[in-house]
Image (cartoon, rainbow, N blue to C red; front, side):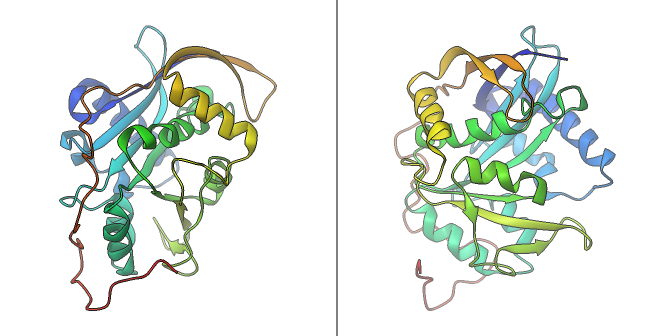
Length: 260
């Protein structure tokens, strides 16, 4: 059982080798669950400079235990949630375009290997880092599409079901016998809906993106030493504030969506 790991964040185009290891690990987990058509598992993202990767790895870098990705809405590429649900509810494209003006994106591609299953190391910890780096990326908001099992993770980090699309936020995805819930982080800077303990931890890591912490597994009474390296270099000011963001994947409607 691994109890000392590194969690690292980087722009996808800066580390192709780690991206490939991420892809192989994610695909293996999905196949073990009989899932073969999840849009967030498509490999094109590794060539997209608007994608940021979070990996959980051994200290020597030889093993990858899990991770997640944050896709920035860049006005050029649809977010995975748009690709996954747009044919079922085209309104998702307009909401993404609206929120992209102040910076938005999507937390997706969450997975963990069987070696760390049940510890939160490969699943919850990188999800939390995904929220932490939203401020670094300049996002006001963040989308997600999660399974029933990971809905609680999203609530811990401040997200809530996004009931404005789908069937009160739910979709039959990735298969007709499975349900996914659209979630939304409405205040990426304040994290007001996150429990105080989690909010304090996220604020601390935003101020100290390179540090070593003793973390307690959220599911078992096990201590884990985590080496955080989540400071992303080379970001441009307002890189993902997309004024007049086009509505991708569907025709614009005459009446703009309002945030009701």
